[in-house]
Length: 423
Image (cartoon, rainbow, N blue to C red; front, side):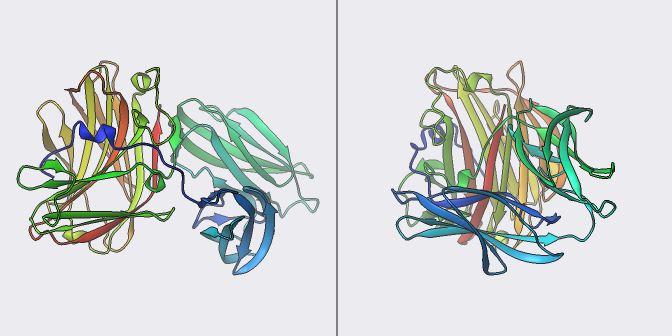
């Protein structure tokens, strides 16, 4: 990318009605779990009358149905691989679903489907687990959760062989333990190390309020109508969102922006009293992206921008693909990209997972902490000064940018599970 949007991104739009969809908190897609398997999900619908019922399919067979907008049940399954589907039906005759492939394991012990080990989560933290025992014929009596930084505090217990609860935890690192006790005096446990990062906004890619602009080479000034020189389109379905770029002028770009907090908030967080935004210092941008033509992308960019009290903190992060397979970060003071020396090699025709962690320090410096791509974490550890902003600007925005190559070859990027954590 040759330039970075500084101000126009804040007023990207206003909130719109959420789209229909099914959110499954347990089990996690692709997980190996124990039996009985805990299914926890909720649903929404664009139908004015709302969601009528929800159900669980196991290998194309409807196995469980519950009335209303949520379900919480356990299903006993034999060891093996399963295609499970959680579906909602609304009062207007419509429906939507989420597919969750799982494997039911054969070993006994404690199976934790949420949170994932070594994951960063928001508070409250959802814990979902099941347990079995082969040494006690009477079975599992109860389960519990130990938490605190040293996992020495029992904070929750429940009777039976499954648990599903949420715990409010302050930001920090926790060595949690989920344990079962059987009727014969035995016990087993599974440790789960987590980083609690504050409040998380989920699936922003499916949210309303996204706005797109062109950035026409060579000046890269924002343009709202510059077709056919640079073209763009966004398609939302409630799951992964499709972003397209094309055009005729080489090296032209497309910027997508969503104001999540503050002015024009799409997440119901307008911060009218100006008490939230100035007190937020830590941010995690977590997203999955897919393209079957990544080599056509000059750059893919992922930004977090914070504005208040006449200050701008623009955490720009770009992955140069055709541009050199390296991560760059944005120097606010000198208005330029700086190479990090960290390789960026997303996989073509596959889902890629990017996690970016940044911080506004106590003396209002921008601290780029780390970038993780497909499970490989790299420390950035660089500090930059702030930029200025108009005194009335107040909020936090998330950006996705797609840059064209030397032929302005059209390409598509799908973005899914775009979560934003702040504290």
